[in-house]
Length: 223
Length: 318
Image 1 (cartoon, chains in turn purple, red):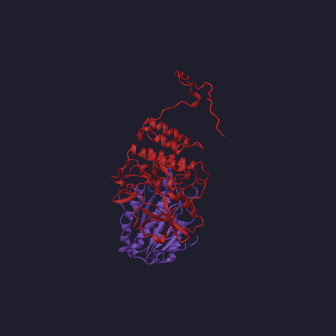
Image 2 (spheres, chains in turn cyan, red):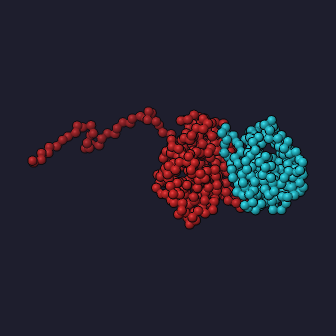
Image 3 (tube, one colour):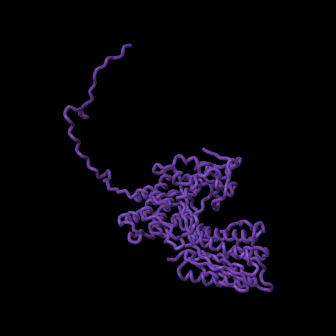
């Protein structure tokens, strides 16, 4: 029987600048997220989760999965530069393939959600805005809602441009590890709330927190 | 009626945070927790509704058990100066939590409506008789609240906890979402995905009939171990569920009515009676009773058909 599914994609910066405390914090937080979502029968049934890491190139580290069926998680590791274009193209390809597959299996799929996390500037000279436009344009029928988080040296203007739903920038009131821990909690909470609170039409829609401790909320660029 | 000043409470760490408020420990009072609303200045917030719930507390009982025994009922309104900011309620006892991979989780009803997951480890789930007892107690609690004119509203997996100690005990949480029939709740109530009444118009408020439908959802989902089973579309089959033929037949009969229109749905009392496990036997209706012949009066006793007799009395002396 077809299910209702809300897909979540974590698109995480694995560039060299994330080395050390930041990437360790993400690797520590992901098993917590997996536990919280995976053991919750309702949320695990209604949401699926994927992880894409990006540096010079993007890589699907965890294909879109029901977390209650996932027995091991990838470990994120740092290398190279920060190609936003590769990340945005990769997530678009994944969304296109995943949504088509789920629909062909008889499932009802709700608008996908992307949590985009970076600590740096996009590679110099990279034309990532075209890739962003292709991902978020209404002409792409599965265009996702994007929640963007910037930490460290990330540019708040770029973070605002990437987000279509909410944008947050770390305010240095906490350590990068604590901020990333709060990021992971916000992601977990969004998945739980989105998977249990009905939208106006009874379906599912992204429910993301307005405020995240350790982060300042940024305005989101109007499309 | 108890009002407690916020300044007299030593508010401790946050235990949980939801869309409307946070639940916090109160230092020095292990038996209660404090729910603090995020935005009590919201025009939709009704402190009167909260006061009414607290005033109901001593009037509600089920099977001789006061409401505090089976629901985290608001029992003291917390005020900050002239403003209501939240309430105190009983802390949910440890027996309503489970340990999974060394972490503590509320024992939500959804665990009983899903197929076991490898992630749950060696979690001990209630047996079928225990599940029936949990559903029986749930129906009894709903009936007790309906008797007092209280509408539950958001009956759903997350708001019903079961005891990990067995014995079929259950506990209702998030009780500040309930309200007296026809009155407004403390805050507009969130619905839960897949717990909607298909016959209710979108945006319609809560009422007892909708509660009855949601109670039927809880019954069918726990008995079929399905997160989204619906009366009318699904049935309780004896073979996979272990439910006896007789009980399955009776449950399916009530489920058939639950899928029907407003006014025809089985009451919580009917579910409680069915799930009690108690035998019942049919009795004749008044129209089919026959009148038996009256026994002959015993000799020497007054015949009721005799005319009443009188004895003379002396009139009082004036």
